[in-house]
Length: 132
Image (cartoon, rainbow, N blue to C red; front, top):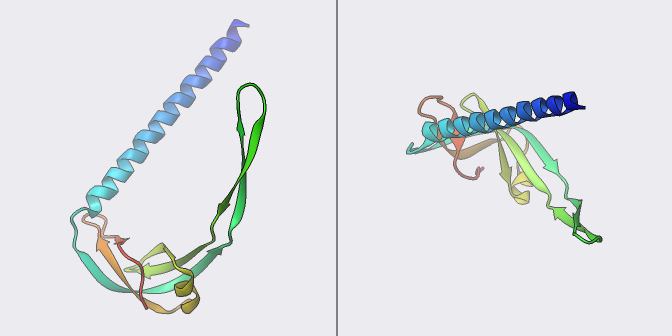
């Protein structure tokens, strides 16, 4: 039985190290993105719509448990979302838009969009909502 404790302890330690490493890596990536785009001028560019994605609303069910028995089932409605894919400076970016804008544009339409150009990566960071 002692070997099971050692095995589970080792697996827990590996999972803990992996989790911490993941947190460190994600923090470094976000910090580099921030450094890449901070204090950069806002540019107005022309992009092209290369895709459209609609996600209908749905209900998500979750339960809450309480001590002493009993729990409750709750429902949360996730609203519908409208997303377009914009090709800008050779990069594709997904942008969430309002329903009326989504309905007004088609794939291949040009759009004007505000963006910041990355200091090191030279990739565009979308700053505002697209306009026709």
